[in-house]
Structures are given as C-alpha cells and as structure tokens.
Image (cartoon, rainbow, N blue to C red; front, side):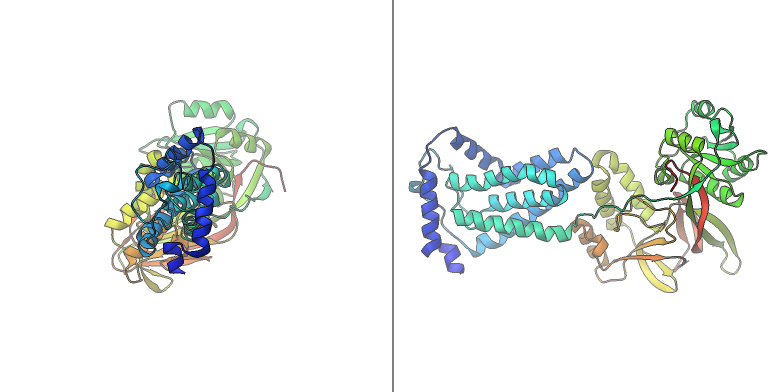
Length: 500
C-alpha cells in the first residue's frame, strides 16, 4: 500500500495519468488564469486566514466557526506536511503532462503525496460548516476549486488531491471532538404568578444606586417620567445600600420594590423583597445586569410593561452563609445570591476577559484571559464538602447555566432548584499543562480537571489561609468558610409575558 501511494504504480498511476490527460485536453482560456491565481491564494493558508478574518467580524456562531475552521486547517496542514509528505515521497507531474501555459511555475519541490492545499481546504470548509452550516456551504465551492486547481495547474496528481482531502476531512472530525459544537440552549421557561399591578408606578418604591454603571443625572428624571406615582429614593456614594433599600421597602403604601443598579444592588434588594414579601421590579442600571437579562427586563420598556400588567414569576434564591474573623469566634454574615458566586482565580479571569472583550469579542477574549490567568497564577487549596482540592476555579450558579462548560452565559430557568457547581482542579499531574491544552482544544468541559455537578447545598472551607469570595460581582476577603443553600421560589419578580 505504501509503495502504491509513494510511487503511484499500477491502476492508481494509470488513472492519475488518464485524468491529467483529460484536464490537459481542456481548451485554454481565462479559467487557466483563474485557477492559477486561486491555487496561489491558498499558499500557506493565506486564503483561509483571510476568510476567517472576515468571518470573525461577525460575533457569535460565525466567529466561532472561523476559529474552528482555522483549528481544523492547522491540524490538517501539520499532519500533511510533517507526517505524510515525509513518509510518502512522490514525484510531481512533469511539464510534458500539461500545456506549458497552464503548468504552475515554479513547481513545488516537496513530495506530491498528499496535497496540502486540498487537506487545508477541506478541513477549513468542514470545520466552519460544523459550527455554522451557512458559512460552510459558502466556503465549500471555494475549497473544491482550490483542490481541483492543484490538478489543473499540474502541482499534484488526482490521487494526491483525493488523499489530501481525506486527511482534511479527518482533521475536521477530530477537531470537532476537541472543539465541540455547543448544543442549542433549552427554551426559557418561567413559573408565572399574578403580581401587583402598578399603573404609573402606584405603590412602587424604587431604590436607585447612583454608583450604578448606567446612572446619569437624567436617570431619576426618566424614572419619574415613566413611574410618576412611584416613590424614588436615591442611594448616594456615602450611604449604606442595605439601609436605603430597607427604607424603600418599608415606606408606607409600598406594594412592590423596585431597584436600579448593578447585580450587587439587585441582590440586596432581593433580600429585602423576600423578607417583606414584596414583588421585585429589576431595572437594568448596572454594567452587566445578569438578573435583569434572565428575568426578561433588560431595558426600561420591558420593566414598565410588566409592572403595569402585573406580569410576574417565581425564582429561587441562594442563601450564602459566610464565616469570617477568628477561627474560634467566627463572625457570620448571611447574603442572598441571585446569580453566581466564585472562589479562586475566576474574578481575575473575568476582569481580564472584560478588558479584552471590546477588541476580541467574548469567546476569544475568554480563551486569551484563561491563558493569561492560569499561566501566571497559582491554584487555591479548598475543602469542598469535606474533600480537599487544589482548585483553579470554583464557580457556583444559582440555577443551571448554559453552555455546560467553563464559560456559563445564560440561565433559561430561574426556579430549577439547583446550584450549578463547576470546579477546575489542579489535583492531577501536569495540572497547568492539562488546563492550557484543554482551553486550546476546547475540551475544558470534558477534561478530567473539570468537575460539573449540581447540588442543593455546598460547604467550602479555606484549606491554608482565608479565601476571597465573590457573590454577584461583590468581593469579600478574609473568608474562612462559606455555605450555599437554596430557598425555593422565595422571590417574586416582574417579568413580561402571558400568564401560564
């Protein structure tokens, strides 16, 4: 078999020569120039880098498809040039096999078997198509043209192109496992309840944090305009957020509590709403507004509509019991968690990702941030439910987040009764190399260093020294132990939509 591939004897060589003669019989024309230029454009993968750069301008699936295509193309190129061209040396077609005006010049000097251009073309087309079928279908004719051009210009025998295409397809299939296509997210579902109708904000008290990411001098005036009957209390930088939220919740005549601010302020308001049995109206006033997005009120328009019609739903809340201070006389603090908590390097990773995101987009920024964070920092020792671990990251979500890997983005259900627990451990040998490799190949979710579980309660104790805990974006240093539990359906929140 090896001799047949290397020297092309017998029926393979005969078929190759017959096909080349058929191509050489084509009349000359502008198509000769076209295929020569198309073939040259794919030298060293330049064509595919250009296509990927253009696709990367479109965020989301198209950008991920470009990255996946380049990964597949890189694997195919490496296998072709470093392995098979060494193992299977073969002479390329001679000038007498094709018209001189069609023959590529200068002819490559490497082995003819297999075609690296064909391997890269097929790998890139399939790699992109696995993630974004529309982009894959658009690239496929170009890839086929590149593969054919290698025969048309006399650079390869047809069997070289066929073998190279098979290598490209195999590389794309392999990298599909390395960089798996994310399954579709489940549909958003909410447990509907009837809330208080608040026409023009009647019976609504709103706590407005002036340190919220989107607060301006016009914010209070805008809220007065859409909720003219509401009580609006501002929280100045020197005031205690919890005290001002409590004041808003206990105003006479208050039938619902509103909050304008970031996720930390929203968490404080949620605690007050649960304590006083008030429905919560979340107004997106922070930088990220995770809960407002999940609740269906990412802008003031949706929030006003839901409050006016009394459209509401139920959500679970996380209860975070924190132990700080001296080991023999710890101070206990209880917090409400609406979104997420993290321990370890996750806060640093998020900070780096947010710095890179405007230039690179969220997926690529996440990968770069992972590399930077884990290349220079050290794991943390923690005791999780009685088991000691060395951890890079421990992440807990109040509710099941998607996708099911290291980069949670969306939470379609707010009352599923679970804590989403994700740990990336450093217990294994060569932990740092394993981590970087899994990030590079997109296999963090399936790697042995990643542990994805669900629970209703989790206890975490510091292994060596006090740890830093982040809850809904607010950090708390000096933590000795923390316990996470749930209150099922404890929070009523306004959310637009028809009643179930």
